[in-house]
Amino acid sequence: MVKQGILLLASFALLGCPRRTEVWIVEGSTAENLVFGIGVLPGKERSIPFYSLMIAECNEHHSAVPAVWSMQPIVGTEVAQYPSQVRYGASLDGFRQEGDSSGLPPGCYEASIGGSGRVVFSIDSVGAITVRK
Image 1 (tube, rainbow, N blue to C red):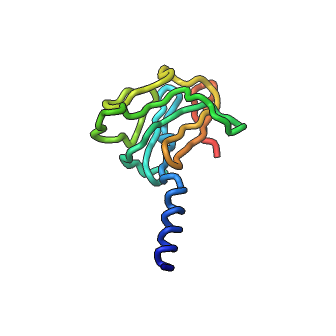
Image 2: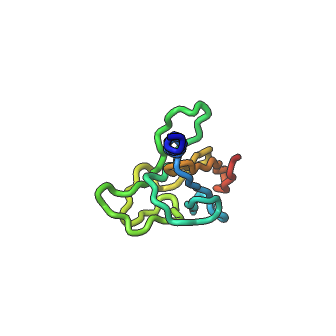
Image 3: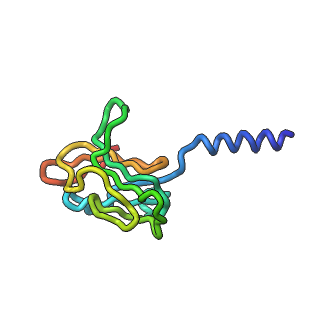
């Protein structure tokens, strides 16, 4: 009985936590060639299934903000290989895009991928990218 109780508590704890994912800005990226790395550990690219990669403007109030750009697998299509890198605005087989894919103007943005993965970054007036902590 005690073992069943411990197993039940462990199951609830695991179900309540988001899946571990990471998204980051690949070194050398600029506003014109913005590349995101995807994986389970920071800086270690790995193909993992994800529901959506979403880019939104920064929001100090933590309320819902519409995506500036997003990509997600096409419903009903089997994705042969999920990417471990995604270039902003690039089309990939089996994925659809929403929003403006022509480029991001200067400003603050947050990239998120299903699970725990997020990165906040700024683009300055010359297109340089700074990851914010």
